[in-house]
Length: 261
Image 1 (cartoon, rainbow, N blue to C red):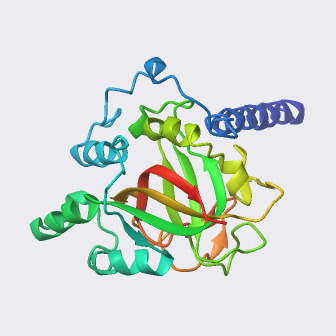
Image 2: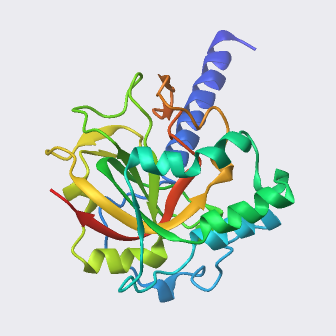
């Protein structure tokens, strides 16, 4: 093969590699803000387990897809970041690196108790972004979760090495409409927004202090050392900060958001 042929082959590889990367990047929704969803157009609305096949993923997805409930008269336990982490600390310490399938019968009973209540978390909404296609939403690009990264303090920059990691909270397609109708707009609350190409953009204002109310969920799919830690160690080549969360526990689904400042 001559040099010109080698160059042509190499050029084709680069071109198709870039094309595939572009298509992969487009798998994240271009949505920039909450909007009213027509759930009748969603093939997953009556499938709480989503498109999952394994029992543990169906179990996790069903918990993620709990519908909103009436909060009137409901006693909701409130946490700040430190209180939230203390609440789940014993379980976290005993289940490092574990998945649902690895839990002992006693750990499973404790997990059921921890995941049952609705709680609230108060903190600063630093970063928000549309989540990728996931089995909990039948891998639909348009019907996706919204990821909200809640920090104890209000930094003047996007997440970077040396910063503490956030607590993750997620709005789902099943809870989005009620939050939207409450007048909540995530770009009006978050300091930064992550684009589909994983770059950050400022929303033009500081992060607002918020109270998020919803169900506790142990997202054991993200219970590894690369995901969980107290401090961000690095920014990977794809733009994600690692680790990216303080605990595998999150509020998911979020059913109500209140601005506090």
